[in-house]
Length: 240
Image (cartoon, rainbow, N blue to C red; front, side):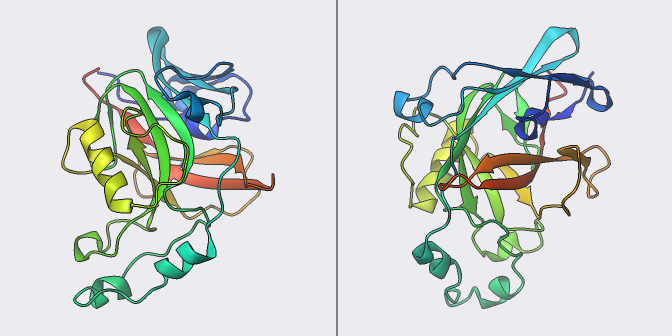
């Protein structure tokens, strides 16, 4: 069975069409907006997006980014720096850092998955369309040493997420994401600390996983300045 560590398209929005032979897939820049999302969300997206194809002309996914990413507000940043609740001090003291200055709960894009995929927990993500929202991992004891950063993107069904407005209730978003994939844990794309600048390719091997990849996603802040993030990619399920 072919196993492709993927969602390469996420970081290839500025890349010309080409073949990524190391992972046996082809990334192409195409035009159009996703079906199945609310019109108010669709109008926030860049129409130029990536279509990722596997061998034998199998589509893996299509990914859109929003035209702008919202920077974190002073209030939200202050909340992240607040002392932990009683009983969570030890977990907070050992928590990974927050790397990105993006507003928690804000919309950063949309992903359309052609076939079942797997997240970092090897949790199945059913084929379909999902909004992508930035979030920060809570400082629970169960989260200690699970990842290098606390930043991640939640995948949420557009049936639940039908507005581009910022969603301030993190627990609600986490619940929506879990419900969207029919699992007890939310579906997510983990973000990592950006690599040193200067890399020509947005794709680099994941030093934590010999089969994994890290992708750079290039976007813009609310004032039009370039902003980038890097994430550990999902993988296509062996069974599809």
